Image (cartoon, rainbow, N blue to C red; front, side, top):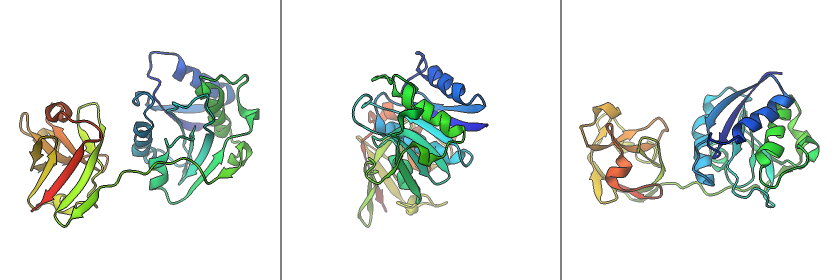
Length: 265
């Protein structure tokens, strides 16, 4: 039975971890197909993992299985879960790594994976990706119904997704939620939060971050002047601060969590 499985982890590619998980899945379902979404999530960073999978999963076909392993609590009492959100399935630790997915989907069902019949034996205390999560994804891809893995739960872990605040009629306060590979600062401010600056002819504005202010919105990175830090609507659907062939993060000397204020008029 052919099935598509994505993998999102903080394992990197230098070690055997990712390949071993694929081997476990192929041992159960030799017809499984894989897409390596990312193996460079910041180590132990559940928030970064949650954002990574949330920005990508909707671009995959319905019924894709997403294996998401960012698991600083491996070996502890945290639960393995199988979630159905929208038209997608997710196999992950119950540590909040699916929080952005929960936020984006109206229909969510989460099960505690407790039927160890589907696990590899013995279960290691340090590699649940191999012994629990990969086999569950494999059997799920093989056609085993979600109900077979465990009962539904409602107390699954989720963190509050940070939202920008309109602190006055003329001021929106947000934050940087990710710095990408190119040094672009991805904020949590969307066109719905600040429609005034995303029009074809935006009203005057100033974006304060770090010790600098940005007052120009452009349509593409290449439209930026050399060394200029500018605002742009990124492919993530959020306001980004970027620099043409440069790193806005290095230039502004800020990172994730930095406050971003948009002043209108």
